Image 1 (cartoon, helix red, strand yellow):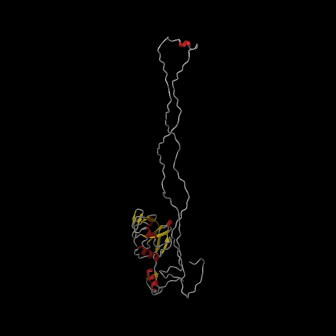
Image 2 (tube, rainbow, N blue to C red):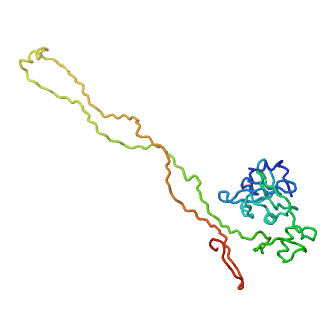
Length: 305
């Protein structure tokens, strides 16, 4: 198997950021799978999909490392569609074969038939299928698959067979697993717009009326009486005189003063609304297909799909 000499121990891989060929982030390393012969990292798992609901395995044979970033020659969508693997479940020979075919990588000489989680990395041990009780030699998992496909078996080969077996590939167990996709929705906050206050100046003409006054000349004539006779005779008999009086008047004037009117500031308020999210989800269904001579019965609980 191809190893990564950049890492001294598998522990240094945990939490590393995996990026694709286009530079986009695929995810962070969640689990490390070791080669069962060399003990070196061979696969890493990352969580993809909505809310990290999908776990995908990525081979390290073509990966490059820079600091805490692992770059692989695949994009995120390609990795997301890789054969699914449940965390903590054994990585069987057929699992590895499916992954090798999907990524277009030639498989190594050993397989991780059984995997156990040791707290930091996932390791496996190599197993082989022995041929019969009287024969010699081994039959690999790939050869066994070919025998199932062609209807033949190596001489002396023995293997336990369950009531239901897989006719479309390697035998797994006596039941099918039916799965479906579930839609998980959430919210994210993003910028919806901006508002700002802008102050500017306008002008207008204001008219106000104010009362004003002025003085006018009034000529007063009074006859000579005993009361004013003394004042009238105080001067010369015939003289030339000149009297002057100063007249005043009021004019309207204007003065301006700047006074505060109000204070204005910006704030926000949260308004609750509802949006509908639509997405296509898939579900597996299992139908029973029999020939005309097969008798069927019903056992167990649950609705038939």
